[in-house]
Amino acid sequence: MTKNRISDKASQFTESVIREMTRLAIQHGAINLSQGFPDFAAPQVLKQAAADAVFADINQYAITWGAKKFRDALAAKTKRFLGLEIDPEREVTVCCGSTEGMIDVLLAVINPGDEVIVFEPFYENYGPDAIISGATPRFVQLRRPGWTFDEAELEAAFNNNTKAIIINTPNNPTGKVFTREELEVIARLCRKWDVLAITDEIYEHIIYDGTTHVSPITLDGMRERTIVVNGMSKTFSVTGWRVGYIIAPPTITGAIRKMHDFMTVGAPAPLQEAGAVAMALPDSYYVELATHYQARRDRLLAMLRRAGFDALVPKGAYYIMCDVGSFLESGGFANDIEFCRFLVKDVGVAAVPGSSFFREPSAGRDLIRFTFCKKESTLAAAEERLSRLSNVLPGAASGSRVGI
Ligand SMILES: Cc1ncc(COP(=O)(O)O)c(C=O)c1O
Image 1 (cartoon, protein in one colour):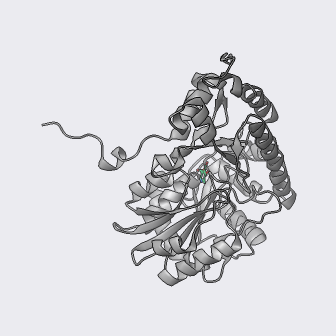
Image 2: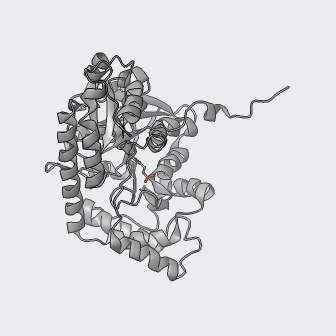
Image 3: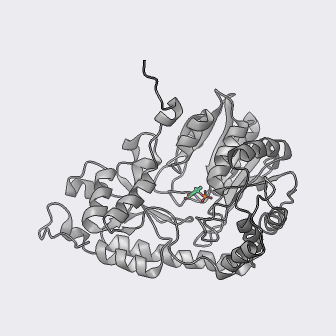
């Protein structure tokens, strides 16, 4: 008799499509506008603080739920930006990136049969997160062009089995920033059905056009039912540091800390020291961050449009979704995946197939996502390649391949 060596859970999801696109980009020497990691330097002051911490021999386990200095700094920053007093001793857990944070939270609150509402398109990790934690996801559509949801559809998704709703604002992949009014609707339903709001706010400071980020935890009656998942990756351009954090009411924090402790013990100790420095950066840091990204957003928008893409304007985060329906039709591509493979191999630019953000791949078959968290030279190289797209599309008159 042979036994199945792979668990049912592991068999239910595939590897990350986004990371696969990064690998293909390397293989084909393409400009990688797929995975959301900056290719420019992290702030000098943070690198110095991390190096100083290593040399000061802060090289052993930190307190499992986070170095005190970092938790205190997180509480101070939360007070500064959200006007909220949180107790760093009982309401904060530091973890290995918000990726660990999300799974810790779900493992801490989900029982078999519990439903979790997820807006679709969704950040691809939420699918496997639901499977790993045993949650049953209930999807609610965000619809183009504004990525709005239908209140009645959302209301219908809530029931007695609903344990939580995941809200990612600013949103990956759509760039949507949930408005206060939309969040009030969600909050009303959370209160009515006694549901937890798990909010992924990793792009909280990356917002454009004067848009404001509203954290659901600040809304009436939400303080005791909101779990904020956040991290240093995006705000401080240090995706490889793997430092994230969770803010939750004390009882839930107790459960989260147990999951975290036995999963990873703790986040990197010297980098938490640097995290404390990061949290104390002045307001101007955040203004510059948003200004820097808005210029890159406008740059990528312009070049995509020049290359013939139907690009949707994001209000936050650092991605641009494009409707590629017309390219599929004119180039004879079956779907987004085929088109992305063509882009990476024949044009030399990597993007993410939109279907990876949907439960039913067909729902995203005419979408692809580009990121603009890249330095000017990277964007310029992508621009040069994209400008030749129309010449290399199957059926184009010249038909010459771009040299990559
Ligand atoms: C919405 C969202 N949440 C979480 C993450 C992962 O963040 P971290 O590096 O903190 O694990 C990402 C990364 O792309 C993201 O887009």
